Length: 128
View (cartoon, rainbow, N blue to C red):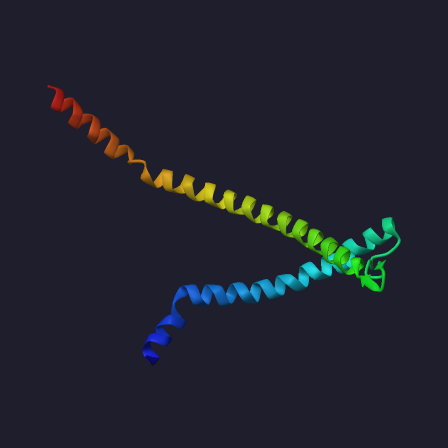
C-alpha cells in the first residue's frame, strides 16, 4: 500500500496539479493587486468611491446588503476580464510556439535531395 501511494504521488499528474495550485496562489496575489491598486482607483475616479458595501436597501425591519452583492459582482467582473486577457495572451503565445514546432516538423519530414533523386531514378527504371 505504501508503494502504491508513493507511485501515485510520483506520477506527473499529481505533481502538475500541485504546481498549478502554487502558481494559481501566486497569480491570485498579482490579480488582486491589479484590481485593488490599479483598476479600483480608476473606478473610484468615475464613481466617487471604490466601496459599494455601504449601499443598503431597507424593506420593513429587514436590511438587504445590496452593496456587498454589487461589490462582489464588480470584483468578479474585473478579475474575469483580467483573466480573459491573460488567457488570450497565453493562447497567442502557445499558438506561436505550436506553429514554429509544426514548421520544424514539416522540414524534418521532407526527404533529402538524395532521396528525391533516388526515388526519381527508381520510378524511371520501373517505367522502362
